[in-house]
Image (tube, rainbow, N blue to C red):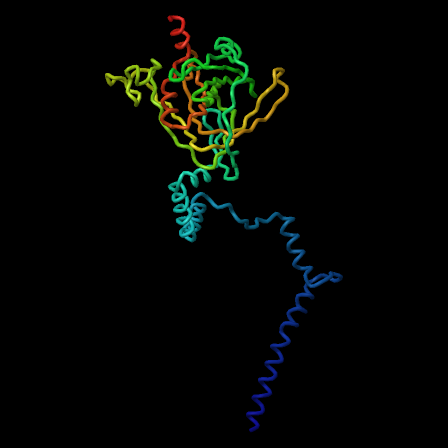
Length: 324
């Protein structure tokens, strides 16, 4: 009984000493400070100051090398491979979707100085007609004002009216007009450059076409086949070139800027355009400048392609008229 009591007393004494140990350690730390030092952390502060004064080397984190960065990228990719795979599959799916959805992803592109922009809210006005050309000039006068010779499709013949309008960036817009079955057929022409001249706001993707043409300016009635190859099958000449074209089968919004005669006042025009064929013509060389053309007023794609394929090279129309 007494032994049991003595063991309990010894245990209580050990626990008491253990409970006093933290306080004794704190007192020891305070005793290491010089007299008058304030606070129990003054020793730590002095040690840090001494380290900085002696400029002792302190370990610093090193920037990861190329190998470490590559391993980090691999770890990140492994952790997110499901998300990456889903994103890639989604992108491929979008690109394989219908043209309107693909146009919404691409948003816009430039074609010969014409900006084609996908805009679901662009609602054209119903019943819009193709505007006429107004007071006419001669082809020679139009050439002098515009700085390039207007192109005249053989399938349409001589135009009923020719006008020249000034547009920004020192460009000229040549417009040729014909009357067919009581309707206006309009062909706008201007030098093809990288800067934007027209903006087409469409609700669906235009159709991409390839327009075969021959340097002779003839069509199938002159012995050429409908696909642009000559009757003898020779299409290797310089003039046998396939012009890429865009066909807009639905009415859409067309906007552009015009400049007054003084070149100081800009006016933004916007109207509803009907079915339109848009393409570029010429090699871009000095004797064959590249021209952007937009044909409006022809509802049939086949007829529009026929007109574009009959386009004569600059100078050829005038040579034929002078020979007559």
